Length: 246
Image 1 (tube, rainbow, N blue to C red):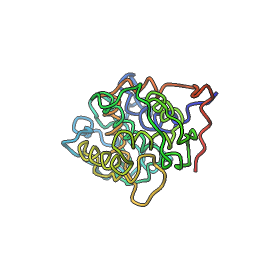
Image 2: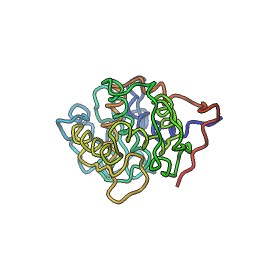
Image 3: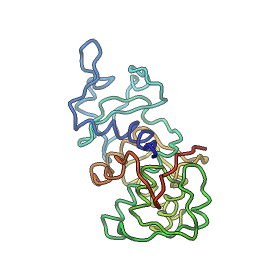
Image 4: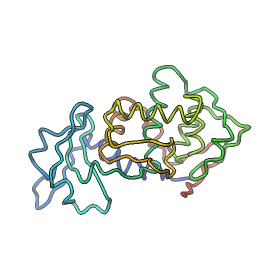
């Protein structure tokens, strides 16, 4: 059976940070709670679409000695920034891209545009994606429910492209929807070039923007955790294959 590596790669690096409101968690150094590099930020900095956080010189100091190039810790419900490190640096998001793709899928579900039982076809384009995938065949269809499972458990590039084509008519139109939604959320550091995250020139986002879309997904569509908490499962009566990264 397949362990949910996508859950670790995305929700353990980003979404775990924003769900800390469910727990009484603090970082402590010498028994003193440390919520931010700058204690004055606690009451003023929130992740919102209406105001940019004040990023002072300490934002680049990496006081927690993170190995990553950037990082952010927010409270899920309010968006209050608890820790920040290079939060506006534009970086390649890889499969974290799929957080926005999943958000649009969930919004289409909640609006009634699609349903979990809809049968989604696989185009030649979707089948050709490569990278992490479940090897969709252009002759087969999967339900939206099965597509979501494959995307969230296996980070399936072929499935997310099939879903993008099903919702928007083409991957290009879906990517435009992604960028439009990013602007609505105030994701000013982000430009999406595809819906799956395979490297492409100009396909960038930031830790801050990832926090914005992750917060929106968890707060407005909490039932996504029905998929992101799957530890192992099967599709087509077979194990979901191990992720293969390229």
